[in-house]
Image 1 (tube, rainbow, N blue to C red):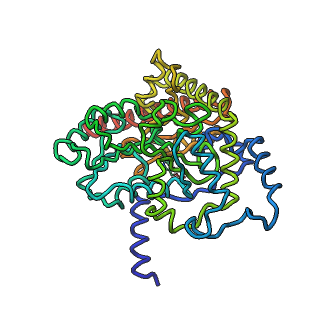
Image 2 (image 1 turned 90 degrees about the vertical axis):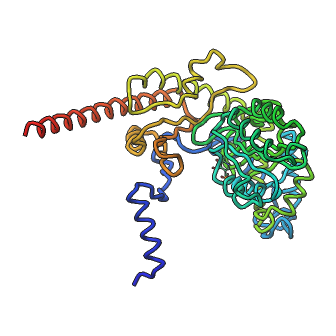
Length: 446
Ligand SMILES: Cc1ncc(COP(=O)(O)O)c(C=O)c1O
């Protein structure tokens, strides 16, 4: 007999299903499926890199049983028995590589964001954030001590909107104007659903214009830009030379670095504070040695420049994909590219330094993301439909993620398949509307 709990949970899930919002764990396609990966976050194709694999296998072979660095464990929080030399040396290497004063490793990017946002802002500080920041930042901000009336969103990537929000805060709060209270600004460098880059330099300039006393602290989540921007993949902040104007950077290891975990880059003081107050760090088992070793090897790939050619290839593919799709799609109403991508294709500045404007994430906007993704699958391409609530209603899409392992031929094939589906979808729609019109005319006659 179902309990009241069963009834409630089932009713909620049924309602989600009826609105086509039910999330399910689809089995990952087996490697033997031969589907071309246009879906995972393995941007540099490190997950399949024989060089990285060899590095890890060699490192594992040198770890003796029962030594100070066993592979499993340490089964303990970092604050108890988990602070091993391997973790400490990984953090020193990360700080040196990213040119940061200090580094603190977390088990995931989600933990890092929740940990830092919950504890760094004081109750009378302000939090300002891009409306499209990741769920983990939202969770951290909501769980922070800053009440909701002191948390303000600004329009996605719109510097003038950020400026207006900051001006509003400055007008209301004398403590902020005097530099006595802090404003925390949360952004991502590359947005995972739209594939657009934050105008970080313009944001820093806007902050300095409105509140020049150094009490606005920019926190940049570089989850999707690690490995792809900046010299040796140090990220967008480094590509723009803004390391010293950004208070906190978060790089995650689960995307281009093909591992798991994350690092918070900040001052030694902030690091000490997080060690004392960031609950996901304090009350969780430290990253295992096995995982830490995998991160060390992936970092070594970046340090030795093994990301440079793959990253350049990804940007070349991205430009090819934008250009090809923008010439194939204008005649269709069923799929479109977002305006920022169209701007990249038409801009004469496309190849300017200090970083390429292209991104490995390309959203194909369509009101029928599931049928498009299913069609692409029949053509051998794996990409995922993204629907509400992950994106707002009316902004459904198929998200294409490019990888260093993708070939020009695969990208061209994908573009052709998208265009083919769009043509068929246009025809289907016009047949449907034609049929409807005829039915209406018939009914009018009766
Ligand atoms: C922007 C951003 N931040 C943080 C995270 C969380 O990182 P992790 O997967 O390491 O928990 C993600 C993951 O999708 C992300 O896209």
